[in-house]
Amino acid sequence: MSKNLFSRLRLNPFASAKPASPPARDIERMMNEIHTQTRKPLLASLQRMLEPAQAEEVLQEAYLKLLLALREERAPEPRAFLYRVARNQAISRLRHQKVVEQQGSHVQMAMQSQQHEAIESRVSREEEQGALLEAINALPPKCRQVLVMRKIDGFSHGQIAGVLGISTKTVENHLARGMRLCREHIVAGSARPADAVEPASKTGEKDLAVG
Amino acid sequence: MQLDEWLCIGIPEDVLEQASAWLARLDADHVSLDERQRLSVWLDEDPLHRWAFEELSQLYARAATLSQVRGQIAAPRVLMFPQPAPVPAPASPTPTGEGDTDHTAPRPLRWQPVVALVLIAIGLVLSQQPAQPAAAQHEHSRPIDHNLINGD
Image 1 (cartoon, rainbow over the protein chains, first blue to last red):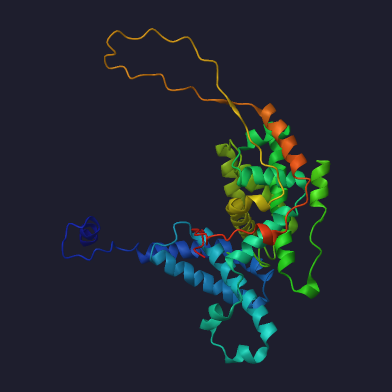
Image 2: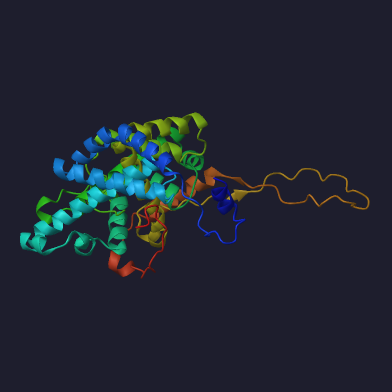
């Protein structure tokens, strides 16, 4: 015990610079607690995205990653870490599945699991910016005005409310709606041509004139 | 985390509504401790809540990066002219100024929304002109470096 204390305080010049990890007992207790609390809801959420077998796999991988992160003290917020890791892994699988579908099953058989990252098709930053720009321009005019004034021109909610003659609650409503509509537009825009959904009203400019 | 077809995938509409409402609330000028605690409770209720909140949050943050292409966005720019607040009668100066710092810093300016509304009107009139084709206005944007939460 005292040896641990000294190494933490770095009084012992021969001790390694790395501080002692949290006791394994504590981590095990934490993992059990988290597992009990989160297993059911997390599995259910993953099953919205993946088939049951895959959901179970992703779940196990996520707990494993959490365990490693706890040991290395990389997860100050364990639950948030767990959920994020599970989500990323699930999306990664979905992305991979889609690419495989498009390229044919022979590719899948030739591949190792480690190559998931390499083969995933990802949009570039520029494409993302373009999609976001389009999404914002497709918003209803008042919604767009509020969102732009807030996020790009940097006004506070109070300032926006004052200038536009609306309540701060309405400002919030516009922001919330703007986020959701942008998301819908981006998702629709990424769909294959056959599945493409008509983007939101293209009468943006006309509406602007009407105000 | 990417802005593509997987954004908020698998998340039901009512959760998206709640998440976006929370995000907008948290973005407000004043957020009470009680509200923050309620958000924390809501986030813990269901993984879907946390996913929706995080992903919409990333989308919301990314909107700010469009400042470089502000000219391509169909929204008038609001300019607010400051109006100086009335200057109070100067206090009698200390004889030798011993130890006292000089308190003649200008008072904060007051904004005049009325002027802003006039400028919005001007902006609306100007923006009725047909938008230039995007290609003509496209500025070559420098690659933007962002530290995203998930280290993407």
